[in-house]
Length: 206
Image (cartoon, rainbow, N blue to C red; front, side):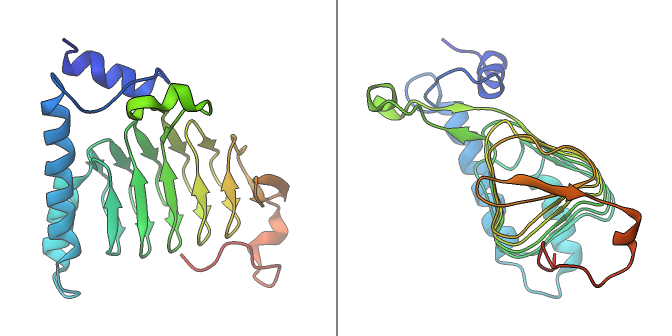
């Protein structure tokens, strides 16, 4: 029988696993509890800021001061997500957080972004019975993620970078660059000239 400690290790090391069935009732209960809390969060009224702040501390694994997420929020667990100070996510953030998602300080996320730590084997025989794998996602401080971005398992986005709207991030993005496209590629570095607005719009308002 897989212990919770062993299972959480498997969830973060890229091993193949199934996340339901005999002996994993506790894991299914974790997911259900997270979805119940998220349901309550999404049902809050716009003026209930204090209630949202409290619920966010119950939904996520850790929350830095000043963090805010606009409903609706969607997550597999919620508790595997850690966000830093002054984090902001706009409407429609989806977190497939089977593995850990760690997000730094002052990160801005535009509407309808998906961060997925989970995937399935390419060969159909290896997907039988819902077999999957998961790898952590890390986003550094001061990152701006544009609207409609999809971030795939195992990706690290370096501090200070911008990921352009609509990008599909399949591999690591280094610090202090602008990266765009599907698959996402580095377009250029962030320079002192970027302190002044007026250049090409890549991200979409957070």
